[in-house]
Image (cartoon, rainbow, N blue to C red):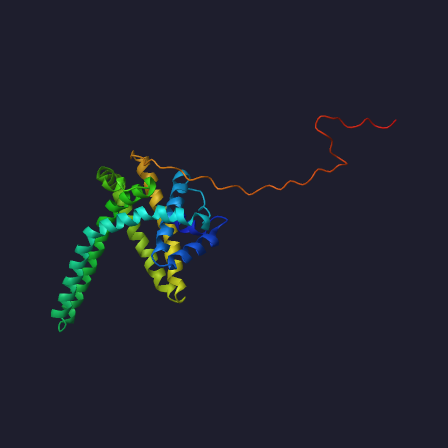
Length: 255
């Protein structure tokens, strides 16, 4: 499961072009992440149809299409942040007060900071399995109606919630040390890790969704992406000495 997801960013005929385009769009402020999100939706649809398929080629002529697709998950993220951000702010504010009051007691201060980090990570792991199916439905359907389908989110959590939590824990354990090593490459190193982790995460999300369907879950209807055009086949011109018109026969041999 995890090995297939890790190898996915480096598979297919358009590997380096796709990674380069995603890194480039990630650097672009504001609009770039939306374009990356829209492109990853196209990748996700391809994987749902065939989990062994390669990532489709990133096409700059679909820049606006990617942008429009990426708007809906972004809007959902803004809506959810209105509920989640106050909890995070209260946690950081409490830690700031603790640092101010316990600056002369370093042992207690370290304990408070570790506790705050554990609470923050637990909150993230608890909310991720509930948020992930909503983001998945909004992304595939291309509207915000799926954001209100808590029945689907609860059914998703009931069937594959533990898998989703394990995925997030495993992804953090893998990405965190790699992110530290990425600082050896100034500036672009971190963006490259973000681009690769996006492909890995979208593959893991698709695997979990397919497992959800295998366990009797409700499929999400979506409009499939148009197939990529195949490479043109260049045929050599016929040899006039060995070819004949289709309705004629070869001349009789000379006596």
